[in-house]
Length: 211
Image (tube, rainbow, N blue to C red; front, side, top):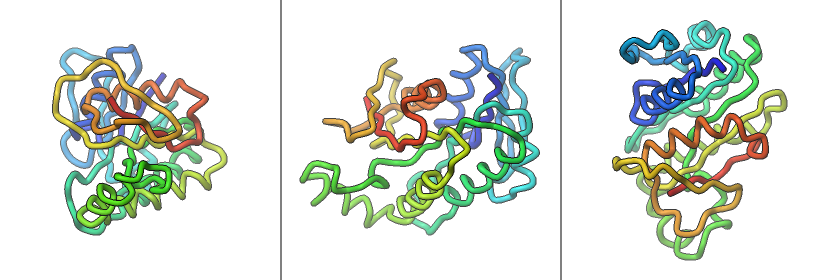
């Protein structure tokens, strides 16, 4: 399978690229600036495109069977449209180019709060929304756009806190919120993104993932 990875130079994106290559996939690493290189790997090509540039993104995604968006704005508190505009332009490119599978990164606070335990609803989520609400608001816009999409098998992964630790090699995933879902490593999130492309029971769902 030919997988295009948007945001391939980020912390999660770099691991997604390595994981997909290790599984024998062809990979197109899509970045805004510097490309991504893996020594002696002829299955990797780089493409430069900003997700806000619909034409450039369409060119970068030509021939991709599946797309993984590892976009993120980190801990920025500034208003953003990178998630919603990015997914809109990605879907537009897929409709033109024929790609049918898409996995994106969202976050636990972007999901329905009423599904969460009381402590999360009353304390944790309001605090996170206060500090990083601009990102979560745009993730919600992104998920709304996906839910209105009928011709793409999409999956939106909602991780909790991402941690820079060695991968555990295992993760939990489900359509409902997960118990004791406090964190997930970047490596395990990357693995879940690649895995999700081959899990049709997850298609057209926003799902929770955690260690």
